[in-house]
Amino acid sequence: MLFVQLQENQNIQKALNERDCRIGELEFMLERYESDQPDKDKLLAAMESDKVAASLAVSQNQQLKVQLEELQDGFVKLVSEVVLLKYQKKIESKSFSDMDVIEWCNSV
Picture 1 (tube, rainbow, N blue to C red):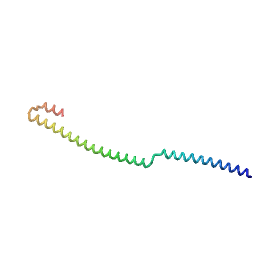
Picture 2 (cartoon, one colour):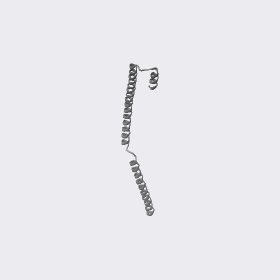
Picture 3 (cartoon, helix red, strand yellow):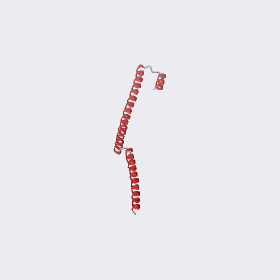
Picture 4 (cartoon, rainbow, N blue to C red):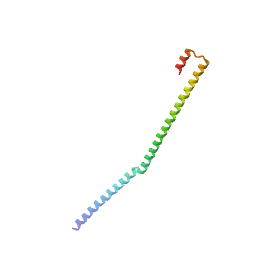
């Protein structure tokens, strides 16, 4: 009877040791898994920072588009004024023949 009980105790001890070993393996795997995962707070902060940067870039692009349109309008106005001044100068010099008008219209 004592021998059977001793045998049972050894079997229980062996099973307990195996379970302890398995628990250690699982704890190690959990630690490794947690260390492989990025810090959620850092990730959220980086995403928010990227969102703010993208928003600023979009805003800046819109401002640049407005400025470009203003420059283009100014350039068109300037070119139109130059063409008009050249045309007025030709008229004032009265050296505009019909052929000059045709050539001038084709060049504009």
